[in-house]
Image (cartoon, rainbow, N blue to C red; front, side, top):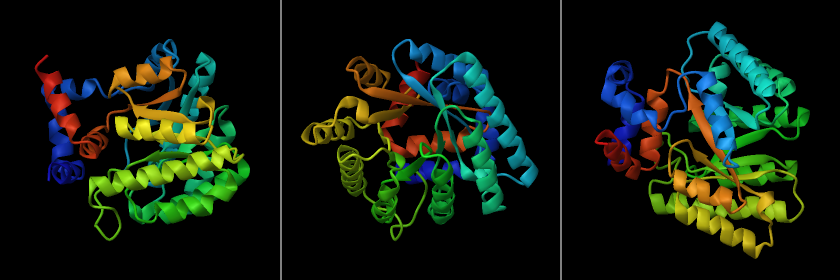
Length: 304
């Protein structure tokens, strides 16, 4: 029930306009956002690097009103790539297709992503959004992958279709960041129960790790803060005789920092998603919905 309420809040324009104005709301989110500017995010990436934790940055914001706005996002990311290179950071970018114009033109969105891939010294990741955009995103990814083999894609374990999607992608040696997913979807499209989502997450993790253990070149990136999913990943890797350097963990900035540190100190590849930008409200509500236990954590931060 709480998760559904948070997902509803993430799509409410009135709440998105009003709540971020309140100081207590900004204080609650400060721990989970690297900042509102690229420089703030990169400063945090540099700090994390001292603890052997690498970074992935993403500019928050989804709903655009014009192709011109998509071009502006492209220019922002091109500038971000320049800044990352100048600072010598092991930081990758992850982009939302809707931010680059997916709802206006699939072809132009693909062209913009190709420009980023060609300009980047590091791999570029393509985020997955709501179920209605999966097919277009997969088409774009396949085209981008043909131009740059290290391009990555996010897949969501809560969708019924993801196992079949992954099966069609694995022969291409894709780099996949697996997450649970946090968009509001009907039961006909997504598993309604957390246990089912978790079971599918483990199933998909095994597929990714098995592909790498069999000689695949794609990067399996396991995106979960859930200690059980982390434990299942390390168990499966051990059973497959897969060394730590052949798979990665990805977690959100500010959530379970202790676990992130333990994994990094244990010589696991640990990458943190550093989200930034003024349009943080919908993203933040979905992160809380993804793991409602985070709400209690936020409340604790408010009274500190």
